[in-house]
Structure formats: structure tokens, C-alpha cells
Amino acid sequence: SARRIEGLDKNIWVEITKLVSQHQVVNLGQGFPDFSPPQFVKEAFIRALNSENSLMNQYTRGFGHPPLVNILALFFGKLLGRDINALDEVLVTVGAYEALFCFFQAMVDDGDEVIIIEPFFDCYEMMAQMAGGRPVFIPLQPKPVSGRMVTSADWELDPAELANKFTKRTKAVILNNPNNPLGKVFTRKELELIADLCVKHDVLCLSDEVYEWLVYDGKEHVRIATLPGMWERTVTVGSGGKTFSATGWKVGWAIGPKQVLRHLRTVHQNTVFHCATAAQQAVAEGLTKELECLGKPESYFISLPQELQRKRDRLAASINAAGLKSILPEGGYFLIADVTATSELPCATVPLEGLAAIPVSVFYSAEHKKEFENYIRFCFAKEDSTLSKAEKILQELC
Ligand code: PMP
Ligand code: GLN
Image (cartoon, rainbow, N blue to C red; front, side, top):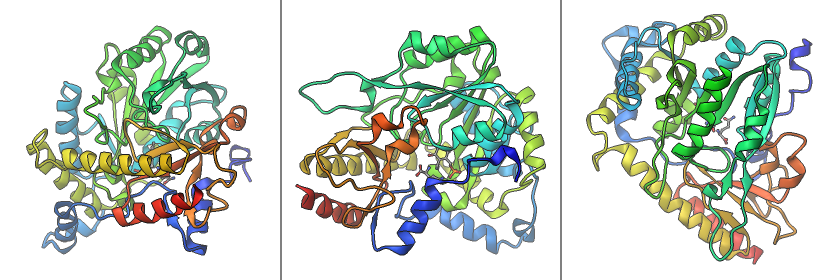
């Protein structure tokens, strides 16, 4: 096989999918909702399939179905406070995953350094390596807290350590905001720190914002592309799957300046070329409706985070009642917990009493894995009935 894939064959998502297919488990492992997407996007998908316009079942524009790139340009134009060109500043991809892949393949060259903030969504490391790049890790450090529950906001970057990671070879910084698995939502001040270093060293920023609408407790999601000097060096990645609780549709996007996006298009046209037309049409209609009611109570982008915040609190309470320590996330689908108190760790490979979850060590580099062996990630984007089953299993741990 080619050298570029050496050592990259193991994958936690392949393992967990196999595990849950072989055992009866309560699955708080891989991050996907076990509830349905909202009716309005499902109806849009069905309408597209049944449409008189037979073209809805055929190829569309390879870089993105026109209705979808148009609404993405309009929507993100509003969010980022600038005019976005639908044709050369937006690329539709097969899930956010493909947008990440296109970025690494298009922008990272042999020997380039890529700064990755730990804990990180696992594929960044593998994708950087596959592109010939060298991942350089910087950990978020938990600061000591007493007398209250730890939250993801208590995990911080050390500014001097971060500054030291930038070298002449640094090509890009990978930001995941809100972060998977910790759930950290970066503050404006933290983003300014990262942005200033990117500008100073002329470095790109890949900002993976797939959980952009899932922010809790009234926290603000700040987009790094809006900070001074950042639009021209940032590729913002999003996911229709996470946005509309339809992860199996695999519609994602990359938004950024045309001088960068043009290289992502080259990778896209030479790999998958095209994403499912009807799924793109459904996401386009969903975003069109959401833009009309942005910020209003009837918006799905208001009701979904409210619902998930409630589920987060419920799972955190079950975990804490079992004597384990939750770290309350400010955003996203996941909650990590310190499970030192139990000798029987629920984890991906050996589910505890039928509870599947992900060991947090998979979100760390080889060097730092050991320090986080006692942490487990749980997905709370689940039906209340699933969370009740998990609660029962956790109670038995007490
Ligand atoms: N980035 C992060 C941080 C994720 O958690 C995921 C998983 N949903 C992805 C990217 C990939 O998203 P998609 O399912 O749209 O490919
Ligand atoms: N993002 C999801 C998670 O972290 C799914 C991972 C994947 O699809 N590779 O669980």
C-alpha cells in the first residue's frame, strides 16, 4: 500500500459501529441523534424525490446544488457580516468530513506543520498525516476548581505555549468550536489570541463549526472568520447533518475566500465530485426556512439547543449520581466524565453492562493519551428513553 496510509488503518468509529451491531447496548457512543430530524426538512427531501422536476434525482452542479450554495452564501453572509459569493466562496461536500479532507489535501504539503488543539476530533491527526503534514499538538489544560461542577470553560490554552507552537513551517491551525469531545465554546478573547497568531505568522485557520447551533446557557458562538484579518485565511466548515439532526444525509460545506476555496474545489472534483442532489435540496429548504425565522422562538436553531441542554443536564445528573465527575459542556453533542471512581470503565471496546461510550484517549495524541485514560465521552443527543436506560445502568455502578 502507499506510504501515506501507513498506520492509519485503525478507526474508533469503525470499531464502535461493529460493537453496537454485535451487542445489545445503550449507545451513547458515536455522535448521532436517535431522534428524528424536523418534519420540514424530511418533507423537503421527500418533495425533492417526488418532484415533477426529474432533475432532482440527477447530477447537479458538482461544487454545490445552486439553491444550496445560494442560501449558504446568504445565511453565512449574514452570520459573518460580509457579502459571500455563492459560486466561488462556498463548496458543498459529502458531510463536513469531506470538507476537512479537501482542506488538508489542498493546503497541507509534505513537512508542513498543523497545530491541533487537544482534545481533538480524531480525524484531524490522520488527515494531516495523510497529506504529508506534521501534527503539532497543544493541550487545553483543566484549571483547578473546587466547590462546583467543572465545565468545559475551565479548560484553557496557555497563551505562551500556544505562541511557541508557531514556527516557519506552520501551515494551519485547526480549531473546533464548539469542540468535540469536550464541548468547549471558545470565548472571543481566546479566539482573538489564536487569530492574532495566525495573522502574525501568516497561517491558515480551519474552523470546524459543525456544532455551531448547539450552544448552551446563553453562551455566544463567535465565528473566528469574523475577527480582523481572519476572513482571508479561514475556511469555516459546517454540517447539514448536525444542523438538522440528519447525520446520515452527509451534506456539509466549506466557506472561505476564493483564493483558498479554489484549491479545495480541485480536490473535490478529483475525488467525490458531487453530493446527493435531493439531500442538498432538503438542506437548502431547511436553511431558507431557518433564515426567515432566525432568532425567533419557532426556529429549530432555538428549540434544538434548548432540548439538548435539558438532555445534557439530565445525563450530567445521572453521571454525578453514580459518583463519577461530569465536565459540563458549553456546546455540542457530548459530555466527558472523569470515571476514576469506578474500576469498571464503560468504553467502546468493552461496554460496561451494555453502555457504549468512547474513551477520551482517542481524542489525544500518542504522547498525551495516558493522562486521559480515566475520561469517557458520552453522547447526549439521544431520546429521553435512551437516557433513562443509560441512567439505570449508571445507577448500578453506585
Ligand atoms: N467535525 C466534527 C467536530 C464532528 O464531530 C463531525 C462528526 N459529525 C464531523 C466534523 C463530520 O461531520 P459530517 O457528519 O457532516 O461529515
Ligand atoms: N462526529 C461524530 C462523533 O464524534 C461521528 C464520528 C464519525 O462519523 N466519524 O462521534
